[in-house]
Length: 283
Length: 283
Image (cartoon, rainbow over all chains, first blue to last red; front, side, top):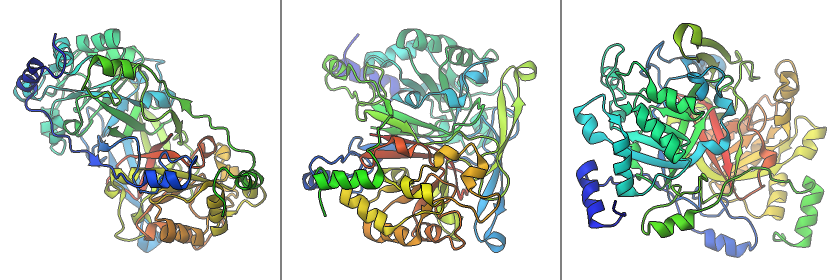
């Protein structure tokens, strides 16, 4: 086992995951916080400074959310639809009406999605929605095997290169699948179930719960399990352990493998089995 | 004009706004970040530390979002509905289907809601969704006048007590109206339009745009304008200036008057005139 920064770690990481990802999150504005603080000693200038920047505490922000659109590919059931409901000529303003099932777009799977009596969306505490983000890159093997899985070996290899996965983190799979989202057939990997896309193995999910006490797992595909799974082991493991999953997450190649914090802005859907959300990585 | 911390400022603030609000945001876990950093020098331990806490950078987090529920009061049109779409006995899992218009629940008004050709939800940059939060407390006058407005005088008084409103902030009205949300008639203040609830005056909205370059305004009521407005001056001012509004915001009495950062997790609704969201205050 080698620590980060050694030649072995760097070589291993590059060989296994490709060259280090260039992070391209929005550079947040910095500025006149110090000047403002000097003007008003004792005042709280947390977010409230004069520079116009959103936060003194994070430097970068990356959206992790796909456009929520009519026709977004779903695992089963109807795709989302929208219609113009109010419009300028008749109403003087514009608004749409939406209809969709909860597992559409970038969304959460709450424990109650698979576990009768399990927690539903509003019961997920705010505290669980802001967590360390860890991104495990399996793009290389996913390119040759569409049903590739994040395995315990992948997690051990990640830790050899990047250090131990912190407790209560969200561990995300970056398979590169988010680039296919506008082509439903490519994103699903088959016209009908069983599909073909990457996911977590049940064993790796259990390992993360038992050994790293994760808050949840996240994927850039339609399902926590690989597309050809008929047993949904990753779903049963994570939701059965009262943790949540995130599906159809975007832009994981744009954030650091570790060191970011994810904010999971899931709308608190009443009796929700999960549901659409906005997520950001901050670092 | 007196600076914060002077006796005058404190006395004025207490007289005008009542006793200082006790902030009750979730206390975020602290911990072993330093120990972890020492173990892995050079590694990024931003959110990814060993303590399990969500962030080393903020200490408190407050949800600003109402439960998104069937029957949530709306300004016009149908209220949201939900139905169980998949369920355990037949499908082995549980999920709902939702139907709603975009101005339901805690939601955004995008510029295109009132301005033909104005920006729609997906065009609001991530950078605009993480901003300094300023909370102007008008609970006292709202208790005696349901159509009370945030006025330019209120904003000047706020600044005398709290310091200058920072650039690019979201300025929120706390009228105390969020406590009425489960009683539609009380929340709307009338069975049909015109309603009775507080909002921003058009003049105050213009003042905030022209003099403080705000990113947007937020209210704890159904509309940016007071409920009896027939001219929608605040809407036209803020949306016409290519900024956004937030409506039905919750728990503004639980966050500091300034010093917090708001994260506006609006789902990126395709062609959205705004739409449901999850918002958090961090400080």
